[in-house]
Length: 311
Image (cartoon, rainbow, N blue to C red):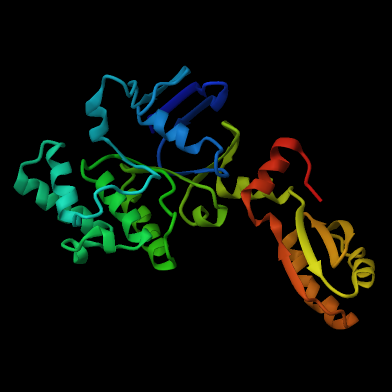
C-alpha cells in the first residue's frame, strides 16, 4: 500500500510555545486514531496535515505532494474540524448544497450529493429542519457529511465523537466500517478518550506535549498501558484491615493510607476489581466508595512521559 500522508520533523511554534515537536510519521491507510489529552497537539497536527497552517519547520506530504499550492488534493481529502458548526439557522440542505457547488457540481448535482451524504450519516430525514434545533451529536454528523461532499479517499476528523450519545457513537462506528471496507477509503481521527476509539481503529498514535510518544495496534498500546500502575481509591471505615488483606494480592504494587480509606496501585486493575468483592465479603469489610482515577489519559501520559505515577 502506498503512503497516503507523510510527515518529517513536522514542527509548529506559537511564539515561544511549541505546539508540535518534530513529528515524523507515515499513514498507509485503514483507520488510525490520534489519541491524547486536551492540549496535546492533536488539532495542530491535523491542521498542518490539511494545509490550514504552515509548519515552522519540517514538512508534510499528502499522496506525495505538499498541501500548499495543490488545491486539487483536497478533492481526495475531507476534513471535519473540532470547532462548532456555523450557520445553524440553515437547514442541512441549505448548508450543504452551496458547499457542493464549490466542488464543481451543478446545483442539481450538488443537491443530489447533499442528500447522498446525509443518508450516509443517517440525517436525511431532517434535511429540511434548522440545524439550530439539532443535538450536539447531530451537528457532529453534519460536519462529517460536509467532509464527504467531495467523495474523498481520506477523511480527517478532529474529535468527531465529542457530544455523541450512545446511538450516535454506534452510527459512527457503522459508518467507519462501511466507509473503509473497500480498502480504498481511509480515516484519520482524533480523540482524548481511549474507550471511545478502541472499537473504531486499527492503529493508535499516543501524543502529548506535541510529540508522538507511542504508536501501534490496539493490542500493542494496551500492553503498554498495562505497564501503567493504575490508582484505585477505596473509601472504607476499616482502612488498616483492608490494607493488610490487600497486601497479599499479587497484582497490588503499593498501598497508601489516606484519611478516609486507602489508595492502591495495581498493574492489573481488571484482576483487582474481580478479586476485591470476594475479599470484602469474606472479611466483612464495608466499602463506601470505589473508583479509579486513571481511566483518563492525562494520568497515563504522565506515566509515559515521566515514568512515575502520582499518589
